[in-house]
Amino acid sequence: MDRIRIRGGAPLNGRIPIGGSKNAALPLMAACLLTGDTLSLANLPHLADISTMAHLLAELGAEVEMNGDAPGGHSGRVFDLTAGEPAEKTAPYDLVRRMRASVLVLGPLLARWGEARVSLPGGCAIGTRPVDLHLDGLRSLGAEIELQEGYIHARAPGGLSGGHILFPSVSVGATENLLMAAVLARGETEIANAAREPEVADLARCLVAMGAAIEGIGTDTLRIQGTDALHGASYRVIPDRIEAGTYAVAAAITGGDLSLEGADFESMEALADILTRAGAEIGKIEGGVHVKRGAGAICGVDVMTEPFPGFPTDMQAQIMTLMAVSEGASMITESIFENRFMHVPELCRMGADINVHGASAIVRGVAKLSGAELMATDLRASVSLILAGLAAEGETIVNRVYHLDRGYERIEEKLSNCGAEVERLQD
Ligand code: UD1
Image 1 (cartoon, protein in one colour):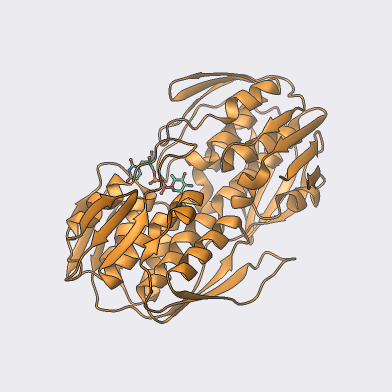
Image 2: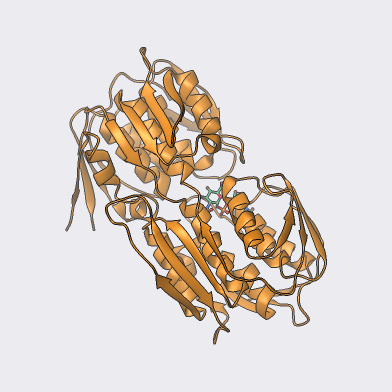
């Protein structure tokens, strides 16, 4: 299994190209199941999760053609996805187990073919993550759903019909699944308390390009007029705000100065606010975002994760690492996922002073972290250990980096191009 070795202490200076958003790309790829025409998606990142989704779509009878690759640049790949009638309407356990976002094929398969079987994702490293909101929402559109032998079996023999959905709590995936189901349902659907994440808006815009009628994009109330059929479209995936945010923290933690090429500042405002209050300078520049460490030290700031436009849970581990080397203390509260503090024991092994009490962690800044051999757990926890290694004295080795490869394209290359001493060790 690959490991990453980092020799800490070098400030990061230069330019980092930001890829297409993984979390926007996954539902966009699933949307190809809504039409028999070709959906052409550009700016797809080169990541393991994207390959898993491509694999799943191929199992479901879609033709997946990779049309152009840009290994040296950040223009991303283009996929042409054409979904004919599937022989099987089943998303098997083996693929869903690898990637929870596989559940996103449920809404489109059911809406187009009146039937779908998707393995239940089961537990995962960052909490139980049920799919009840997805299933209750689909039931509101007339689906009959049974759970059999670890599978969700959804049926709507006469097609789905529009309905009113009020989510009791905000879910990105459930909003996306219901949006894809509602565009082919008969009549009007209203989704209230919808997730407002930029990735949801990106999906809605692509569905509109495919012929769907959706109002309220970017707000918490989506109104959809169902249609009989959608057509193909060409669509470009938005830049990854979490990848950009992670490199912004890398600049702040190493005392560096980075231009994040292609990053979208508007989708990063909650993070920018925290970084500014902590003493970094971050702002919009032509074609991206510029970030550098301010003149003084980084100081402790309290952070609470919330649905968009609040501070993203996918940046919680990274900001905690920055706070671990700040002057002062900070309270970090995780309000989206239970059990998302798995990076804490590893950071403490590097000398961080962090105490977890329920959903909050008290971080008392220390002057220096020291390098150590570490174990990556989930995707964002893994990258927080890389950030810690960049700031630490001495050598850090991060094991089990396959988590990292699910969400960060060529991370060691992007970091070393800006002066970091990082290398991948292949076993
Ligand atoms: C997506 C993102 C993930 C991000 C998360 C929150 C993708 C592929 N992944 O995940 O990176 O961390 O949004 O911004 O886009 N929940 C239920 N029942 C449900 C669905 C969710 O209780 O049916 C709970 C979850 O357990 C969690 C909370 O709702 O506590 C939010 O989850 P959700 O927004 O659905 O996250 P994902 O879509 O899985």
